[in-house]
Length: 244
Image 1: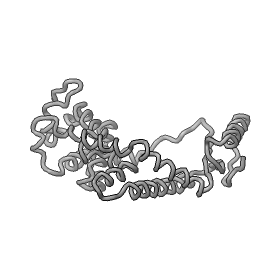
Image 2 (image 1 turned 180 degrees about the horizontal axis):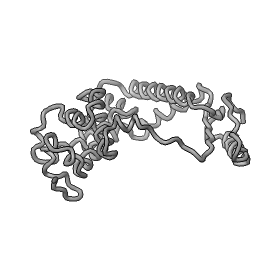
Image 3 (image 1 turned 90 degrees about the vertical axis):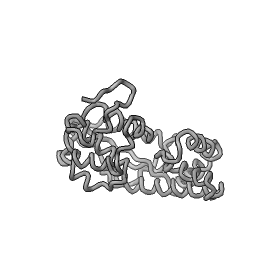
Image 4 (image 1 turned 135 degrees about the vertical axis):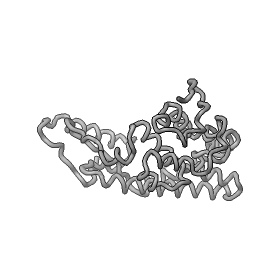
């Protein structure tokens, strides 16, 4: 069995690749994976013998747990490998089987879906202002602090805003170029979100922002109407925008 002291990575993790699957499922590995998911890449070297792992050891570990899932994930895609291994251990079955089993449908509830769809120009203007304010309020200094403390391999540095601030610190972008790139990245992300949520059925779309008094009142009205609808009836659906 693995020796495990609460709050410390156990000493025997270096042998997990060759260990029986019943040993692999010990809480010790789950602890290590949670630390990795949280961005603590140093966890891989926090126990003796870490250097004995050859490249691709996480992929080989997933291959033992779920060969089908391992075949779909690139050996160098560490975040996906870690997540797949964690699901296998938490569910105590291959993640592929969990996908195939699906989830039980939500029953006994009526769903009220309310979406915000403000004018695109106004939305992009707010996004641009927010991205600039991130830099004005210390994003570059925060990024430098993260680099100093954790190094450049921490996953958060690939997030929108941090990525551009990192490029600024590396001399790859000027400040204005970094802000413009962050603004563009956030606009693209917002567009993908809108495309995704438009696939949802029976959404009641409101043409405005959530902090507008008229939109807030319209939301309250929709909720009140839904609560007043008999339980045996379906909540009316509207695909078009609802003007407050």
